[in-house]
Length: 222
Ligand SMILES: O=C(O)CCC(=O)C(=O)O
Figure 1 (tube, rainbow, N blue to C red):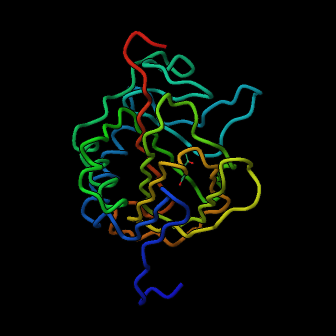
Figure 2: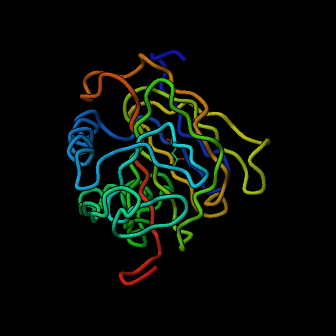
């Protein structure tokens, strides 16, 4: 990649839009600072345990709702039983701005109210296998923000975790939104590119990914 050339926005599939350099460095830094606070608790950032006994290579902390394979709850019963931190209004606002910008439709913001964020930290060895985000009872778009080391983001199709898929490089500050016909597409992160982070973000190594989602759940459920 030639850092001198602007990276153009790209629509990978209907509803799946990559907007390079969406989040300015000052906001990336503010988000890194906030992630540092959320990583401490009330539910600490940790490797999520999988039902078959393995652990995910990424480390995760959630806001609003706690996600574990394969459900959302208010309290983190698989960790320490605490209620997760609230999703702040400013992050909801960023999510609204993100869908409006990605879809180049200011009216898209009004319809979008995410109620959870999954924050994943990738060290150099972390990966995420191809999967669908389908534990939400809503088809509202997923907003993905990346900070730190670049990665290869694999965006596939809604039918199978294999080809056809497209690999895109997600760099610090990039926005990726997938909704509409692409909302339930398989996607994953086969590779992080260590040493590519800009220290100005406050993250000297590793990669943070924040996804904003609408769970479609209400208090008292599930
Ligand atoms: O790290 C990424 O860019 C993707 C994260 C992801 O797929 C997820 O949180 O479900």
